[in-house]
Length: 96
Image (cartoon, rainbow, N blue to C red; front, side):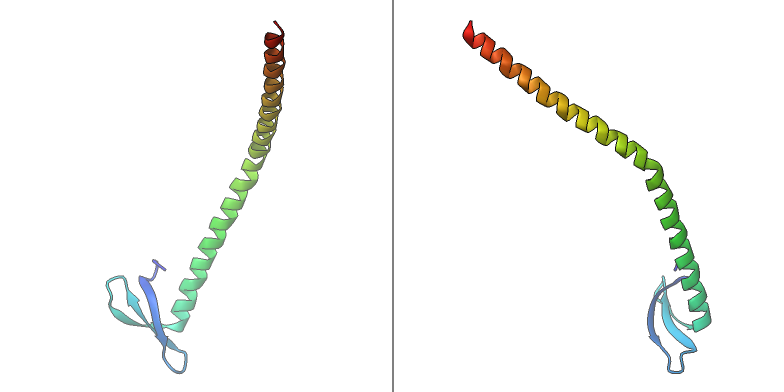
């Protein structure tokens, strides 16, 4: 909650109108609950936007990951084929 400078909420004063909190410097302040709610709403909106941006990046990267998975599968197939060829060559060398 950097926008308000409030780091920690200590307790709510009975009646629920104000909240005690501390600033980054450790100063105890009295904050209107409406201000706290507004700050929290803005923070939630920012996090929601960041999550949406990350989801878009993940969606954009998905085809690349799928292609990489295909390449890995092809390399594994080639690795198996190379191992088979090496075995065949070893058998031929033993026969000679």
